[in-house]
Image (spheres, helix red, strand yellow):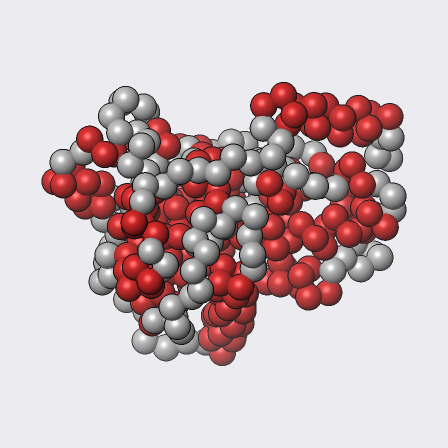
Length: 316
């Protein structure tokens, strides 16, 4: 795995390999099929971000017209990055490969890693209803991942294992659910998941230096992008401005995938052009994370209740 990851980083992140002069029919069909799947998920992502009344939504203004090409490209790149990660680390026999995983986020800015986090959280929520529906039909409601709506359970092993199967498989689940032949295999998903994207996103931060982003000079803020410069330079400042606005009161140990931005990731906050963000008026006041249900003692009590139920009703 070390070799595969370093090869991928060398060929596609540190430099940009030219596309082949010719394609085999099989390769062309595979790429076309994957891109169709990326387009499918990108469209569903946008619909969810714009039209669903999220319990976390801080942005209440309506969307500002159709997507720009920059926004489409940005969202699709994040879905492709999701697929790349799952393809590289899907093998459940792999031990923890955190050092190798770092190549897939240290080559990107914190803002771009937050874009990947938006996609991760969206797909997690998208797949949960089909998964939970099976257990509800079996009367096994406490085994379902029923905390996902509050954003507290994004590390749930069953859903992480399903996410590792990739976009095509996830599309099949969302469209058709789990057939009867698949349902007995769902219990096996409760074993610990290795090398999850959730874990990688949590690792995508540097050690805490106690300095809030609001204390950075403009030059220091610019270096956050330049030090992790990727091959695709975003021509619009909207995503980076939104990311910086949302992290003013945090240090570099929380620049990526912090719980404080769960609500914003539920609306894809760092995916949009500056003009759209301005029409949403999000820069008019400082970001304050809403208070969620199931925090502190209440959350611990709920999880203890679930654990007790599962111990009394062991899965065969």
